[in-house]
Image (cartoon, rainbow, N blue to C red):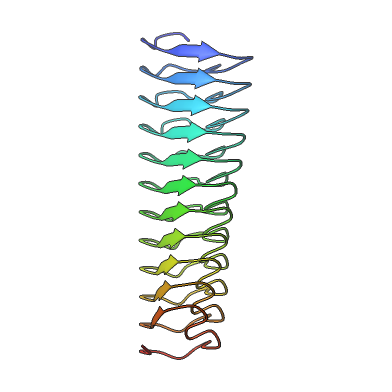
Length: 193
């Protein structure tokens, strides 16, 4: 720590290359690569490990935000937001939530493996186990319920509320499903309610 101030590091090689300030790192190699990033909190094995300049991030759990350089992200849960690189303003609660996200922004997840495959999709909200699981680049989707919008990949502007609602949707857009198994078999159809 050559020039940083007001930092706290607990754990082998935590904040190892740090020059930033107001960072807190607890755990093996947490915030290991941080250079000028400020106001980051990393708790867990290699959490925020590759962060260099990203700031205002919170990572709690094993490998959370491991590859991050973005800012204003919050990840809680085993491997959540692990592959995030430049994505910012994301919130992930639950193991493997937003796991594959790289540059996607303003996504919010709550539930194990929710938005798991998302890479560059933005403004998505997923609540429930494996909701929006297959989404990669689809944006502005809302899924609430167990495996809702599960197979969606690039579909956008969809809203699914309920157990398995819009489960089979892949590329369909502007669909609204409310209730258990609602619009379950829709794959590419648009503007359904």
